[in-house]
Length: 294
Image 1 (cartoon, rainbow, N blue to C red):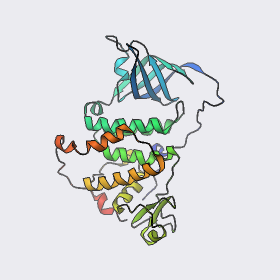
Image 2 (cartoon, rainbow, N blue to C red; image 1 turned 45 degrees about the vertical axis):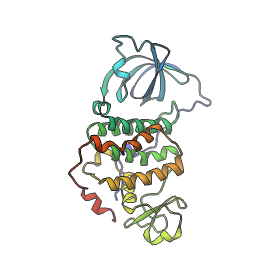
Image 3 (cartoon, helix red, strand yellow; image 1 turned 135 degrees about the vertical axis):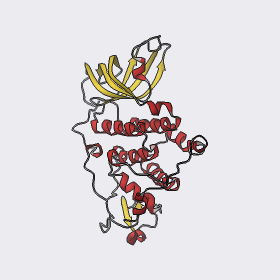
Image 4 (tube, helix red, strand yellow; image 1 turned 180 degrees about the horizontal axis):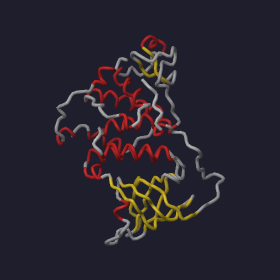
């Protein structure tokens, strides 16, 4: 399993803006941004949270957004990105004056399944970093995830990759690349909280409280921890394998992160009725499944 060097997986960043000890700043600026969420404020106004590439998460006060023919309205819809121009404040509410190069993730907006996964993904971003925290690599990673989802790649796999790599933002860095005891990189593995990483089959006896996860799930989570989105073409998994991956990631998040998002509950419930609306995929699982024990 090769190590990916793509920058989208490099979660280091040059600095972090902290409100503690910082001077209050207000400046006219522009930045690429992705709409995270919005809510109505008073009768005609709105508060819109935008993940900007240059200034992190900012809350914008948009006056009169519900008026007819409001030019900013299309740029503030869910699953929209653009270059937002206005007054960016280091504390309190920021203000938008104009937007350019607006792009909507149209398929996500129009598909209830995709919007479910997309909402969960953006909620994770919101939970993972503080407001005003400069994090361009996470911005680019989020942007890439939405782009691939909008282009028709498997939303579940996109989300799983995002969840696994986002663990670092919650201060969790499991060792996936090799057995934490002997360094072995091939074979069957299981996750051990005690050792903070994977154990090869020869050392499972060292932790009786290991996850006892399906080896297929561990194989793909190990892959997801290092893969970049431009390398996912051809990954096609059976529902049973996806379920074991979901179980493993849920265990990790329950143990280490401990957040319970409404959007996550929605996609869990969605699994019980999505087959009613979606046509079954006639294709089987790809060759990747045959490599699960490598």
